[in-house]
Length: 250
Image 1 (cartoon, rainbow, N blue to C red):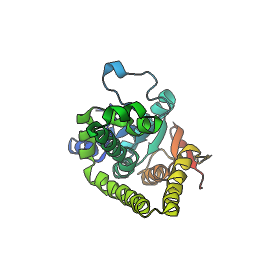
Image 2 (cartoon, rainbow, N blue to C red):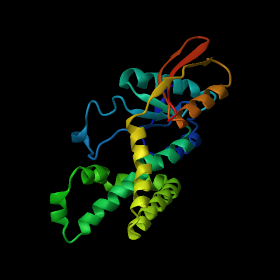
Image 3 (cartoon, rainbow, N blue to C red):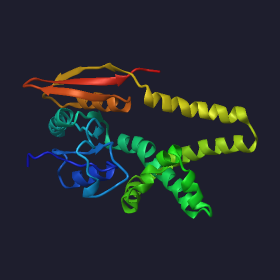
Image 4 (cartoon, one colour):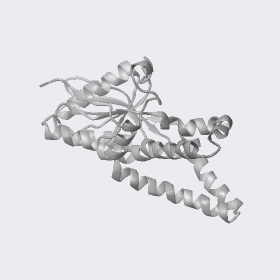
């Protein structure tokens, strides 16, 4: 009854709803380490796979906060994880564009090459851009399908946004519009630069160890949505102290 439960799946709303239906909300903390490779099975195991990963955990008010605190502290201490607190809904929305749509795009590119008359010549010329862009297409197909179906509505919504951007690029290319292409790629480079050069400031907080925990959970979820993460926490009889990092505005 007191054992803390978590998972490492790519979608959170479905599993959180299942846990609630089983009466496990008080000790189940939905989780998703953002780490993996394009290989599967025991032979693909690596001891350092999860070390330093961004690791989403979904805090909830009430008794569940105790399980969240214990698990978050464990992940920071033993995996040096950057614990990103979010609601299950926020996770699924963010993961759609951060992880799930890239699987669709990688599959589309690799699949087009597989069907191409010059497949072998294309593979002979394939450099880093093709290898990086199609890496996740190497994951087991049934696992990818289950992930996409588990977050179908959010994936379709974000895929529409990607399609809209791709349409802008296509329109500029058809029109021989160098300025239009350059503008769109400047937008894309900005996101890439933000990923590479992010800077963080400390944002430490303390909350009462008891109570209804609503303010604590609200702050935790807002921290994750803002791009921040927990780097440590300590709980004593009266207080829970969080060490957090929040990204500096561009």
